[in-house]
Length: 345
Image 1 (cartoon, rainbow, N blue to C red):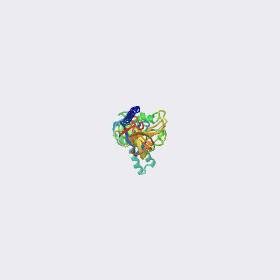
Image 2 (image 1 turned 45 degrees about the vertical axis):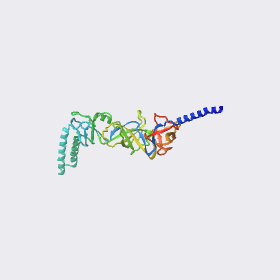
Image 3 (image 1 turned 90 degrees about the horizontal axis):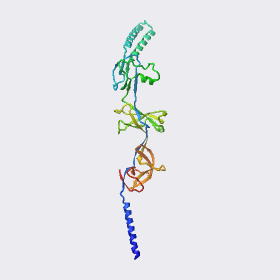
């Protein structure tokens, strides 16, 4: 009789344990963000170490070569000009008198030479005098050699600008500082010069595609192409060792010289590969890469081998198959093996 009474609590305790286990095993699954392993192309990119700068493909800095006062200014800063347009005229009254005089003498010499009244040498002397006078007269007209917009105009009526041949100290930079009258920029075509880390120099080549973004055009990505790579590495003390790449751009309305731009160069492309979001790939303390997947509605940690990557996607060469559900990291949940989960795509 005692044995039967003792058996009752044991049976009750066992039933309680079963109920507790059932309650625990029926915990509500944690909702997680997940994406499917996809197949497609993945670009490998290198990014500029700092913002690049927009520069015109063609630019003309004009300085006076004529010693005279400015008598006419036909355009203002911001004006659009065409190749050959006269922007500034210097006082050329004396040059015009010289030109007319030498032209008359040259014409007279040609007639005398045809009648054998003077020698060929005399004719040539008259010709050279005329050509010299014509060149000096033409120097009084400052013409733009390119089509574009005037970005600098350092001239006023009546001024005597220093000429490009003036006796200025130093180098060409001094001439530009003191003698620059007009700067014309071809606003139809710009490129970007941007620095890249020297470790990436072996991957960057002309002809590669590039993605360009501007602070002035948020949420837009423009496509360019590498047109030039510097043959040497910069060793400037205030910079890390970098190489400079030149990126061509299509016509972009609103772009201006000097704008900053961030550049990513596509150095290789993996075709028809499996990939996952880059931030889904994690690394263990033993330097092994892994992702969390959903298998049978539970979280499972799985080691993977990876290939090339960019900010968005990473190629997975081993460990996953197409359409597997990969769990994305989040501060809203902590994953562990066997944890019940439900996918929220």
